[in-house]
Image (cartoon, rainbow, N blue to C red):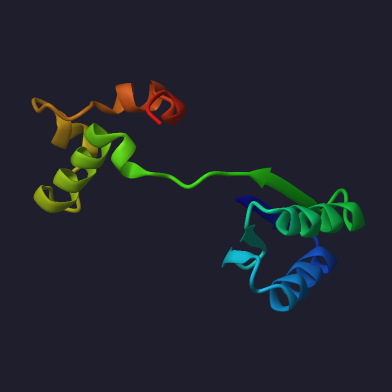
Length: 114
C-alpha cells in the first residue's frame, strides 16, 4: 500500500478531493493522510499529488502487518490485555514470564520476524 501524508492546507484539500473521486483506490482515510492501493493507479495518484506539492506531500510504501507472523508478540499482547490491570506497566507484567521483555522488543525489528 502507499501511505500519503499531506502537510499543507492546499495539499490536504487536493488529497480530500482525490479520495472522493477515486474511492476504489483508497483503502483507508486518516484526515491528512490516506492509504492507497499498491497499484499503478494508486502510484499515479500519489505521484501526481507529490508533483503538485513537492514540499508538502510525503509518500511511503507500506505493507500490511500480520500479527500472527510474530506469534510470541501476539500472545504477549493478548495475555497482557486479558490478564493485567490497565495500570500495570508491560515490564512488570512480563517479568518472570515467558513473554518477551520490553528491552528485547525495543531492539527487535519486525522485518526479522516477518
